[in-house]
Length: 296
Image (cartoon, rainbow, N blue to C red; front, side, top):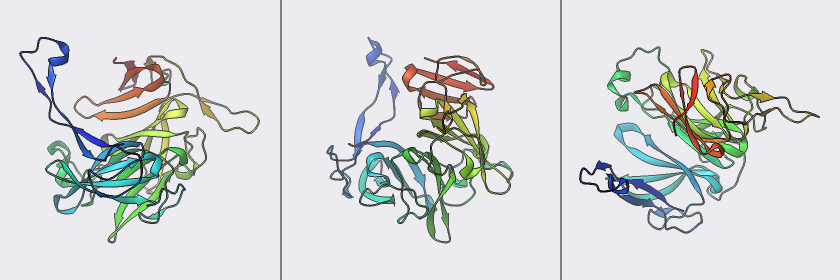
């Protein structure tokens, strides 16, 4: 039950085996290794199945490592000094591990097993290729980076933004009920969303785990978020049961491709490619253009 980091990797030109080819170190940033829920000095703090981490850039260049503390139903902050964890504190959600679905200030909000995190980058941290773009791009332009949360057992996506001196949690897609539906805002349905990442122009991609799908959120001019399905097929529920996703293993166009419980997702801006950890297919898949393929 720790948060760890991998140091910069280097290529060993004298390697005599594949295992020696890449060199680096794994260091513990926070956590004693015991399961629990306690804040304080990083090496004594405890977590309960942390699922994801993300750097969160704040005003004046400050940053903290956000951690989705899955079984503690909250987001924790690990404050770093030169890459070393100094202090851990509960930032969003219950500080006693209570599960729920409640919007509002971060200290009052409730989550139910948050599984994935993504942050927008404020202008000072944008790559030069994006920092010079026009205001028409949908990347956040506040000094504080927004945080997107895949709230797994609430079957929804939450957003944490800074307004008038306060961090506020808002549910932007889904309403707590599981299902499979493309729609705007609370009309959309997910089934255990896990991985989440920001793509080009501020679109948000979500690994919808139990729907075997990759979903996309796009902000409309009204401020609402529209959910669509990038990869995945919906099947009609019977006898009042919610609609559900169809699993499989198929490479092909996005409307024909199939996944089996995708868990993680990331975006490579250099190659305009989405990478998917296709958990139950035991493969890494890629989405590029209109095609789903297998990388490994």
